[in-house]
Image (cartoon, rainbow, N blue to C red):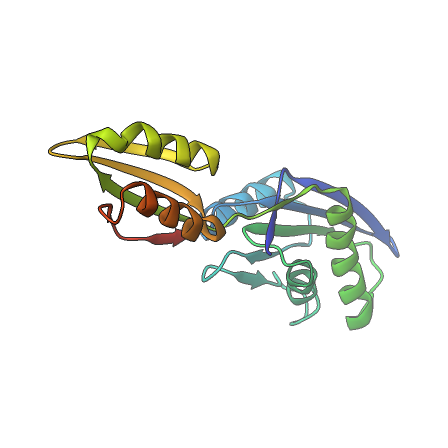
Length: 199
């Protein structure tokens, strides 16, 4: 199961006088990641490179920012993927110390900066949920609400018309249990809305 982060975590690494400032943090997507990287560049105008890697579904990205191709962002991305992270941005600000590290040295430095930050982080398992809506007679509203509460569902909107329609969000794994339970309560009379899975 993929995980995200509870909060940002930092690291600092010095290799042959080059300073690597690592950070990993939860982000909503690429727009937020690009904004954070721009802020880092503004905060560190004398840095030689601000490299970054983002795992965020179809918005994932890896930017070497002038380092030789494959020596910075790819190793950073490898650390994130190896740890099954999602919705996470890794950044490393490098201050050049005057001594070249070579391709292998760069790969080690960038991956270590991210790995060290990750050791300070608290991982949070990502819940995959589904949005459901069920329409039942008014007499069953209280019983349905109790079932939802027992399954830790998050209540959404409730509409009162000829019948009552209750929208809710629940863990994907628990969805078959709650639908079967409500179907039993309604003796086959429950009308279900469309399902939408999300992380």
